[in-house]
Length: 227
Image (cartoon, rainbow, N blue to C red; front, top):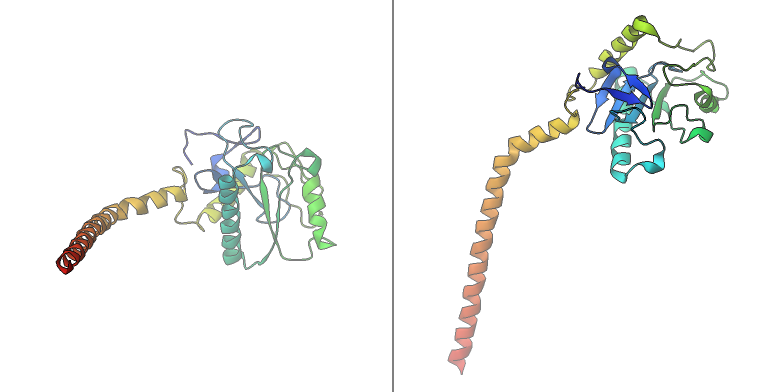
């Protein structure tokens, strides 16, 4: 992530040390108020306070696709590195649905089992928890609750988590659009070969058209001779 760019979650600034995943329009970042270990958030990028889509229906199809590809990619990385296969993937869409920060965000919560009884009680906990820096996650069970990370000490804890998560995505280049940059590099690498192929195709097409024209002329000549 570029140091000259400030990102926001709703009205709250995001410290770049929290960000571990980035594409052109999406970031994944470490949660200040996690309910469970490795509870992370995925959001559309905003470079101004309250500048992101607030509710899901405001998003374009393209942005929705990029958001959930990011969610899927991060989930797969957690599966590979934590040996966990069960998850809650959740979104509170709007204030009446329990959205604590008016910025579209997806929760990824790895589940080992036994954290809540019944297991789906976690949805109520997410709804009651406050995910912003001035919020509180105390609605989670005391036995599994992770204290809200505050101050420089809390940031150091989150930075260490983000560093580990970032190592799961070696192809990412935080600071320049993430995976998008990788795609551009591939395009540049194979641009010359692609142009050569296009030129060969065009030459072949011209030859084919000439051959067809000759055949047509030949047919007309034979018909004339018959007369």
